[in-house]
Length: 445
Image 1 (cartoon, rainbow, N blue to C red):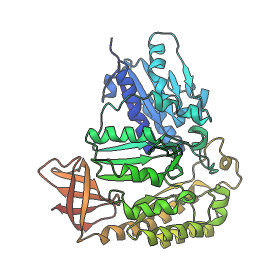
Image 2 (cartoon, rainbow, N blue to C red; image 1 turned 90 degrees about the vertical axis):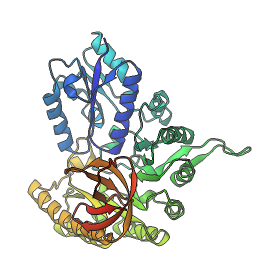
Image 3 (spheres, rainbow, N blue to C red; image 1 turned 120 degrees about the horizontal axis):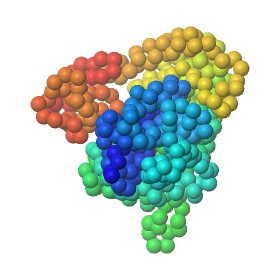
Image 4 (cartoon, rainbow, N blue to C red; image 1 turned 60 degrees about the vertical axis):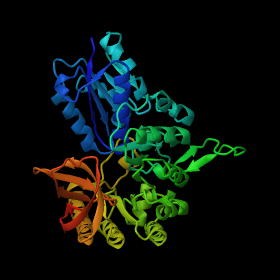
């Protein structure tokens, strides 16, 4: 009997990439993928543990999708790593597997199906970087490819921000070898992929082992800027992006490649989290607000077309109202194209969870509204600034109305047009005619 599996993913781009590789592994080991949960014998959830809301949503979703037909329920990724044994107390979960162990999932599923095991916990968060790379060596060739694809080049984090679970759920920093990254990207481009997005928890700390390039050259490591230069020369590449960057690892060389490589988008996501130095210090962010702003100014001087997005946390333990307004002032100074802002969410076993001075929810909620109102003004201004210009847009989905399509320009601004042709997966030039808060409207050239 061929068992069908359904996979649902929550969270960051890293999780999206991992889920696609899980689907490849399952498909190449005899299981059949279905896009309908009601048809599945095996339900797989690959998950985020950054905020409590995402965890609660996961368990609610499992309860809604689990049917009498369901043979196996498997939960993987960061929430599995964070919950440990406790995860089996909820929703009749059979398998819980960590982000370094998803290449073993078919074996675990077969063990449950064959009644060799009822509960399987496989976390193995190994901090040996040699063993961390083992899963990548087991991955099959990509089974499918789209016009835009994520490629993991780095995972894990050594920064240990006091609010963040990533070092505990993803482990220490590991960079994939240059040859492996290039091989995967070449395969995607040969299959018709046009946009590559390099991803990692701290992508600009990439330090991958490089092959021998020329006779007599010694083996060494490549930083992200060197890897980008090599990728930019590959045939078929139309657009290149990377995310997420830590401010302390934004190098001069990385800034320079943005002014040298046309396919590399002039847009970088650089999370700041807070604009107050005391809060940044107890967050363990390893930079001050001024150092952050000066680095972005330096980036602008080297590459005048560059724009930025960021992440913000409001209501971090002991944050005063004046300290919160330091964040507002920093955001107003930088003027981000887009931003992502959240209330501080306590995560078990992180240092911030044990701090005194936790901020009440109503205060966090009010601060979030104030910050988002301020950030939205800059976003609207950036949208209005491209009215009357022609933008190259990669279309990725249909709009709400008939014959409407939505795509992204180089600054990840949403662009909406009308067309009788299916535009999904295509680059088209669009003349921008009007703007709203979260999108702009235009016509095809």
